[in-house]
Length: 175
Image 1 (cartoon, rainbow, N blue to C red):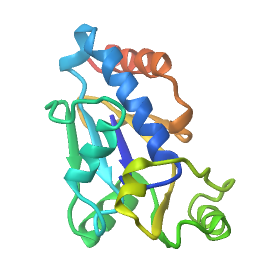
Image 2 (tube, helix red, strand yellow; image 1 turned 120 degrees about the vertical axis):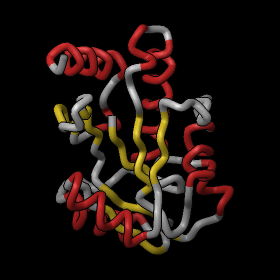
Image 3 (cartoon, rainbow, N blue to C red; image 1 turned 90 degrees about the vertical axis):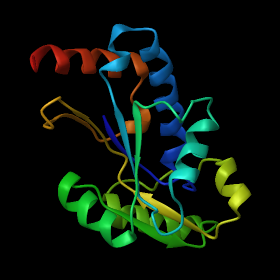
């Protein structure tokens, strides 16, 4: 699975991180646990890094040292060269995250959809950031050959059982 998170994000990321933790916990009780890797791209590489990515999922009880989770980051230029062209996911930093008008405008510009919700994120509150990351709410299931097989355009709304069912289906058809 491939996802895109900003550790200090105040919109979809805290919700989606909680879903990922729930999925990982559910997956741990199945034989699939060792076959699934969760790859998370940091879409705020200039302001955060692996430590903050781990902290985001740790807030929801995940053990971030699990080798099945990969946190990918780099310089802002490196992430910009990989994520938008490789995964067709756009993102941008919006200054003054307390301004819902600025967030709404940026969300519309990035996603072409409704404004992103504002969600409490203790990590962002603790970091006392004055910006936010707006991005498309996307998650992908990638098969063992590296092909994107399932794309969720509203990843924050995907429930763990549906995700598990879809992962099983992709694995069954890619053997």
